[in-house]
Image (cartoon, rainbow, N blue to C red):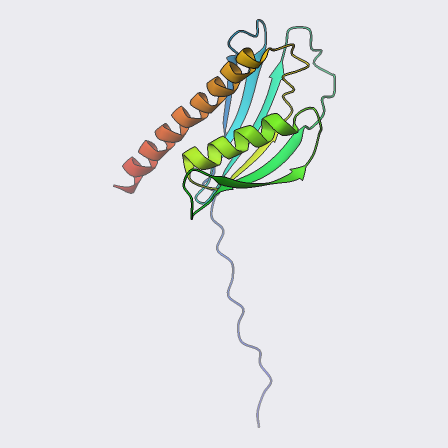
Length: 157
């Protein structure tokens, strides 16, 4: 006599997440009294970056727009180019978000999700000031990436 017993379903093993988000704040160059805020998360196969700014006149209870959200990844056939797609569009920040996403994907050589509500035009920045701010943001993220790689290499030993 055969019994209809279903095979035992393996139980999922609970493990703590290995994600360690970093929250960074620094003053943008040439944008007096403007603070850049970066929420940075490096994972095994991708990175997520959320960018925003604040000024002393911002009230704590005010609601700011989400900004744009872009996915970018390095082009494996051409190391100097990237592929990107917009996941959410906010017209004032889409160009800045896409530019940062492509730069990070190329320099990190991994897929990157970038959310950004920074609108350089509303900050009253000229092109040179905007580029210095963008360079500063990318340099801070890359410095943290290097620290993350070194920490990961030490823990692997």
